[in-house]
Structures are given as structure tokens and as C-alpha cells.
Image 1 (cartoon, rainbow, N blue to C red):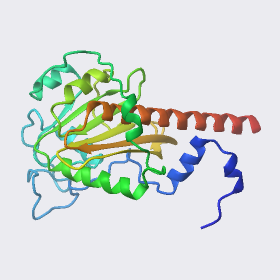
Image 2 (tube, rainbow, N blue to C red):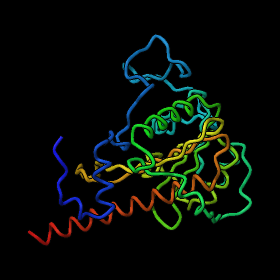
Image 3 (cartoon, rainbow, N blue to C red):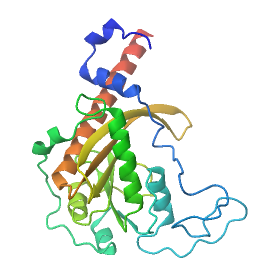
Length: 272
């Protein structure tokens, strides 16, 4: 491995964080990675209807029902979670809470003070959390969520922005407040979001987040660099404040990366 360039010493904190993150670059989350929905016939598919196949002549899907939506299931699968119990609720508005059998939030919109939790959720690649530890926690959380009896997935914009957030969780108790906290977004066909939070109860405590730069294919087929954030919060009963702290820290990281890319592009255009 080549020695670090001494010029890095003069770089700002955001650049150093970006370079450190690059050492452990992952596959872009915006490119769906199919894990359990096989593209070839299988002798057994635990938890999946036999009619799901992507080869030969198309077959009819079983009737969908609340918590069983194939398009949303495929989207969760791209995020690394496969709802094997066939009960995953996409919650983007109060009515979706009722469909999921949950209570409406007592206050909406909901302001959440997460300042006291920010120091408890380190960024991967920092002194407080290495990438390997974060990746192990992320994968084990995805696996456990896949086996959960039900998944509750609040979705919307980070407050005051147009940045999409999805929380994938097995927790009924915080879903209504998360819906009230997030700004409501236009409900379109589901797709991966810039910020994805994996929240799991009933296990050992872990908190962390990671920000990665990936390439996204635009409508004109061009590819542009974007940043995405992944938040993991687990514990016996993770708090709303801890999850919100992860969202806030992720937003700050995404905004810092976007600003740095814009400044770099402006400098390159000026030099031409």
C-alpha cells in the first residue's frame, strides 16, 4: 500500500473522512442485490410462495394483502432485508399506521431533541467504530429483521429537506412517532432511499452509522457520484431519540459530501 500523501494533512475533516471511507467501499445500495429471490428454479424457498420465479413463462402472484406487497418486498430485498414472514408495512402517512394495526401519533409534526444521543452513535471509520465491526453489526441486524414476525417501515423526508429516509424495524412502539417526525413525502413506487435505518429490538445494544459514496444511474443513463447513509441501532428497546440522532448525523454527512463535490466541480470548471 502506498504511503499517504503528506498533502492530506492540509485537507479538511470531511475530505479525510471521505478518503478513509473509500478504503472500505461497498457495492452501491442503489443497485438492487437480490439475495433470496432467486433468478433460477429452486428445490425449496423457505418462506416464499412457489409462484415467485423470474424464469420461463410468468405465473400469477398470490393475492396481495396488507403487509404483503411484492414491489415493496423487492425493494426491502434490495436493502438487504427479506420479509420471510410476509408481513412488512410501508408507512408513509397516518392511514398506513391504521393498516398496520398501529395507533396514530399523539403529536404531529413531532419535534425530537436528540442532542444527548449524538455522542452515542459513532461513524464507521472513526476512532470509535471501525468498518469491520459496523459491517458485522449491519449484516446480523439485516438477518434478524428478515426473520422478524412483522416489519414496520416508516418512510419520508428528513425534516426540512427533500432527502428520503426509510426505517426498517421490528418495533411497533416507535413507528407512529417516526412517521410524525419525518416530513411527508409524495408516495411513489418504493425505491432505496439516501438514508436507510435498520432498527432492531430484543438484542444487544449497538449504534453506528456509515456514509458511502456510490454511483447512481440517472434518467439519461449518465452516472453521477452520490452519497448514501446507513444507520444501525439495536438494543433491548432502542429509543426514538437514538434513531433520530442517527438520521441527523447522516444528513450532516450527506450535506458535507455534496458541498465538497460541488466545490470540486466548480474548481475544475474554473480551471478549464
